[in-house]
Image (cartoon, rainbow, N blue to C red):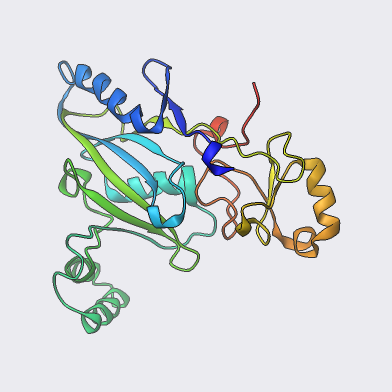
Amino acid sequence: MQEKIKSEGKCLFCGKTFAKAGINRHLATHLKEKATDGNPGTSFLVKVEPDKSWGTTLYFLSLWIDGETTMDTFDSFLRAIWLECCGHASAFQDPKRSGSGGGMWDIMDAYELLDKGNEEEYNRIMEDCTGQIPMSTEVKDALYKGLALDYEYDFGSTTSLTITVMEQYTMKAVQDIVLLSRNEPLQIMCSGCGKVPATQICTVCAWDGGGVFCNKCAKKHAKECEDFADYASMPVVNSPRMGVCAYEGGTIDNERDGVYKIT
């Protein structure tokens, strides 16, 4: 089924729809035009997608981020649109810097320093040992064109993302983070009847490629799967964290956060 699913998004500037493979090239043309009369500063065109080891990269976000925005604000945005469920910890890491200094004992020392309130020294050690970027860092001091960052939310039931800096500009963004495009709700059809979009996922049965149901078929599945009737029913949402932990959807761009609609 997944081979038939399209990943495409609408351009914020002109409203046209493009496949995931071409949307950022298109967005770059708009931003290049804006750069001629934009306010001086630094900003970045950034692509966010699930880590390839996750199994699918159909989901994507295309963001325009101002350089003076902090990584903490970036983290909050990702949580709000794709991830937040139970207040789990998260981290940005530069894989090129991971392991460049220190080892496990240094990391343990870092946690002791954090417990004592020495956040500055904790950040320094973690940055040296793991490539972790302090949340207080401004985006302009962490990102550059061509960089690919790793990001993790929840170190138990982890959602791993790859953040790629597509372009860098000598102008400010119009706000801290601008959502330029996002994949439209994926064409996930009911694995029961195959006729209408799925609205619910069975977190117990979904790992074999099925386990997604329309409301009618969900009632039938509840009679066959005690776990689904008890606790394993979750909504289909437009996020790579769908069906994980207690995630039920975001608080940003709610219009595109739901179920695929047949037009």
